[in-house]
Image 1 (cartoon, helix red, strand yellow):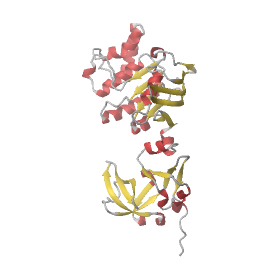
Image 2 (spheres, one colour; image 1 turned 30 degrees about the horizontal axis):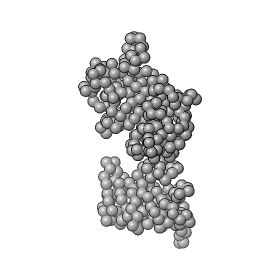
Image 3 (cartoon, helix red, strand yellow; image 1 turned 60 degrees about the horizontal axis):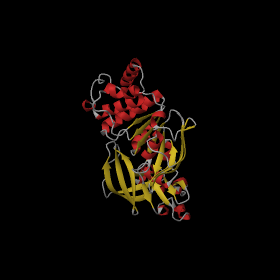
Length: 354
């Protein structure tokens, strides 16, 4: 299903939950709606489903306006955060529910349900009740039930929120593979960046009811278009006076400009470790945090706290230890623009005379 949204707004009394949102979603795409709690993600999802009526704007499925269509006529499958399974029904009957409502023939229902039970890895569990299943299994039942009526659009509201971390990771991979095999257009709401980056073909960043940016996870991470996106995606440090850092003095030409510096923009080590040691500045290791596969290192450079990572294969640092720091680039932004600035000292090192 191809989706178009034009000028979408939603107000609840004086609260403007969604403001002038426009986007297109191509058939077969898996889209993540990502943003902070209360940003408007679920309101957008519920308007697409027909569970909320837009205050203004249009929703089009394959070019047809569906604002006034009831949910059951939109060709949508909906997976809720809390599964919403029928406790008195078996796995089989839960999956078959939508088909029975449509009054499909018994043989058609059985074939479809058993096919989905196989697809979702629930074979052998069809006669169990929800309370006899794990959280991950209950979520798979919810997926299968949503898919049973063969919807053209699958909507998922925080589908992994109620599941423990290990099972959540497994389900992410399973869901992405399943949707790719089915080729169904899908939209899921999440506030988990890792989840959105790992699962989605494209991410839509929603904040205060507005669509801040839409693009692939890599494009959004590499080229954020707004200050909010830059600060929301990934771990980073906001620096108010980046012109104080070596190689970024040119930022003084834009008063009021701030910088966002990501961990991967920063390299730390001994002075002799760097090809252009003159581009480095001295810093102090303040804190070390073990992350399992690497160290997260907090470094103080002239009163500015920066965060970077260090391989476990390298010499272990200690708090209070002096260290040399090379900042390769910074993401700069002000009220009017955003751009990447490379370290000028690194690009144009001072000449060395022998």
